[in-house]
Length: 251
Image 1 (cartoon, rainbow, N blue to C red):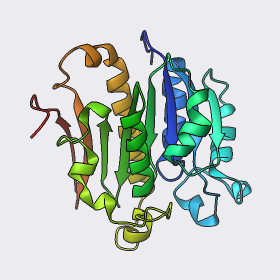
Image 2 (tube, rainbow, N blue to C red):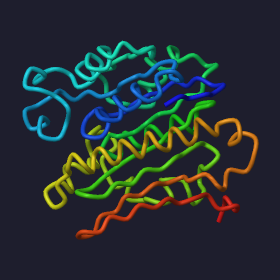
Image 3 (cartoon, rainbow, N blue to C red):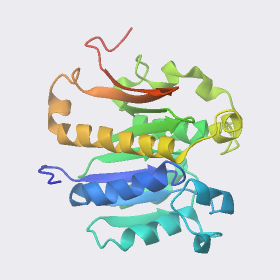
Image 4 (tube, rainbow, N blue to C red):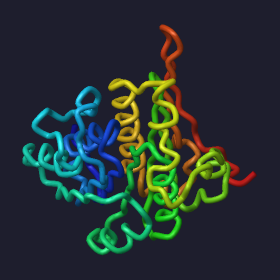
């Protein structure tokens, strides 16, 4: 695939587990020519149970996920700078340890594959407070995935995830793993590798849509651009659909 773009972009992948481990490889393999730098952010370590859904091996058990993913990505010898950060993603972490290392002349896309609301809300807080920064959030259940775009221009509109999903606030904010969907839903809706990969692919698809149309989106109406992608499986039937922005931004 040849990408002919004027811009380069900084990329931050938040969570390199079920979704983010696959997403990181997709990003480096598919978009390396337009990525200035890719930060991998996660404080988890690899456990035996991760080997069934995530692209790690027995030799990786005990390593930080970010270090293992960075090591894997660097063997491809591609041009993007890869930086692992063994931290939970927070507003303060971004401000203190990441923002200064992201060249400001390039837009930043934060790609979220983490499965807890705390981190998602921290990402939204960063996007609202930081110039030229955008995010794409992905999530999945057993067979379905849901992925959506956010920028500060959508704050408090119908497209703001905090407006659409008020349950995001139903957790203990001081606990970085509180509100973790893996804890609350996996017993009833066990995640599958395919659902993880679908979410990762949809995040990458939205990234491609927004980066290829970046100048247009900044200067013109973006109502034709999808803000959400959904893969929904019911029985033997799988539905794929997208949702586009409406012309009226505020209800």
